[in-house]
Every structure is written in C-alpha cells, then in structure tokens.
Amino acid sequence: MIYMPAFSDLLTFMRLPHRKDLSGADLAIIGVPFDTGGSFRIGARFAPGAIRAASGGLRRYHPYHRLAPFEVLRAVDFGDVATVPGYARESADAITEQLRQVLHPGCVPIFLGGDHSVSYPELRALAAVHGPLALVHFDAHTDTWPSQYGQPLGHGTPFHRALEEGLLLPGHSIQIGLRGPLPAPGDEHLPSRAGFEVVPMDELTPFDAGALAARIRRRVGDRPVFLSFDVDVLDPACAPATGTPEIGGLLTREVLAVLRRLVGLRFAGFDVVEVLPHLDPAQVTAITAANLVFEFSALVAASRPARGAQPS
Image 1: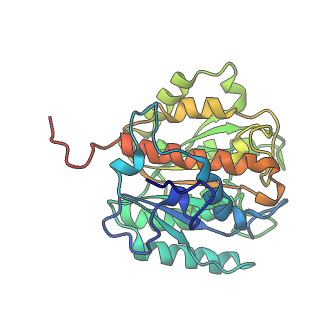
Image 2: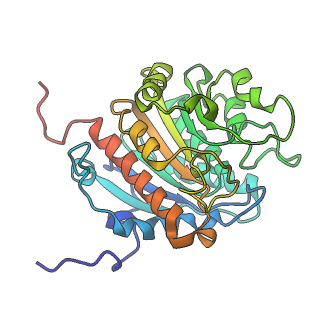
Image 3: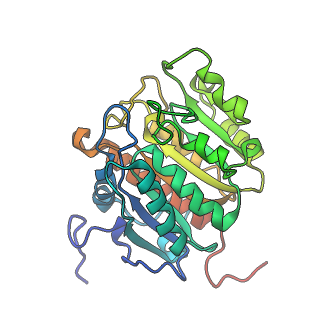
C-alpha cells in the first residue's frame, strides 16, 4: 500500500472528504473566514486554511479516548462559508443564513474562525436547531461588551448580542481564563451581571483540571453546549499569533487535561477563533488550533456509541 505524505493532496482538515451537503454527517468542519471584527491585530480570515494545513501533521488515533474519531463519526469538511469582507452586519447575516441551510440536529459543527465576532452568527444558526444553548467559553476576555468603538458587532461583543437575542442560557454558561487590563472599571463584572459563571485566571492557580471540569459539568448540566475557544486564553508562549494576546494564560497541557474530562456533555457545536497565520512563528498557533479541533472531534466521538453498537 502506498501512503500519501502528510503535506500532499487537497487541503481539507485531516483529509476528510469535502462535502457541502451535511445530510448524514455526524460532524462537519466549517471555516468562517472573517476578521473585520478585530480591534487591534487582524488576519484571522486566513486561519481556516492555516488550521487545515497544520492538521496534515496529525494522526488519527486518540490514545487517551482509545478511538479514532473519524472511524466512529461520519465526518466531512464543508469548506468555508462566504463572507463580505469589511461589512460586519452583512457578513453575520450571510454566515447565519448559509449555516441554517445546512445544519441539522444530528450534525455537530466545528467552526474554524475568524475573529470572535463569528460566534454570534454561529449561535444564531445553532439556536435555530437546538434552542438556547449553554456556553463554555475559554478566553482571556469576556466578549460581553455592548459595543465596540460605538458599533454593535465586533470581536468584543458576540455574547452580548447572543444574550440579547435569547440564544444562550446564562444560568448554564461559564467563562474560563479571563485576565488582563480592561477598558474601564467594572468591565470585569459584565458577564456575572449577565448571569454567567466566571472563572478568572487568578482562580486557576494552582491548576486543578479535575476541579475545573467538574465545575463546568455542574454549570452546564444536560443542556446543549456550545464550546467557544479563543486561543488568547492560552499563554502567548503557546499561542503567540492571536489578535489580543494577554500574558499569564493557560498552557496547552492544562487545556487538554480539562477537555478530556468533558466526555458526555451534549455538545451542539464548537469554534476555535483568533488565529492570525501571518504572525505565527513555526505555525505554533495553527498547530495548537488543529490539535484542539482534533480534541473536539474526539469528545464528540467518545460521547456516543460506535455506529452499529448494541445498547447494553
């Protein structure tokens, strides 16, 4: 048998089949190449391609979960949705409309951002399928500001907009890793006033993956979950190429230890956002993001029986 080298062939995530029709799919990789919501460093519109390229170095078997996710799941790479560069409202509407046409209850999407503003149109599409969602949000920033530079849509506002539209269940939502300077006094209280549980970075030292995973589980309960991962929750040593880096963040091994303890949650969707490929030395951030997508896929696979398995 002749094996295809990792750097060869068409650029899909881990060489998944490319398909625009998601009927019958259990999991779909979907790029959302938009970064007009960025407030400082931009370039995340190029992240979906960079993450797919970095995935070429991954292997298919997950030793912790003892499975190969894409043998358990019928998974596809949808490619990217179309956006309108420079126009936030038009892009948000276009993203939502395209996703509403293809998402269905049996398919878990993993979105490759894009800046964090893309979570808002993603949530609009997911809530149309599942109803309001619990949010598990890894980030250095709250992203619950009511406006950004006087505008309603930006990478600092997605969860404020989602709360306004009833897309989230704040009493079952949690934000993890918040830290860094703020624009104004009191901004640190925005998410708790909205009803979110907040785990600032100061509470994660010393780090206890089991305790944090248990806290997430208690908060979410049995609600459908959207897990949104901004790579700036990581220390810049682990993810230097991001829009608003903040020192003193989580390490990749700590994040993996938490994620692997979340098997069994009702995941409705995921995203990984704020990767800026042109600032990425040795593709460190893109490699991290690709590994996170693989972890998300393994979580979905480990949370359901293998196809054809008989109930006990």
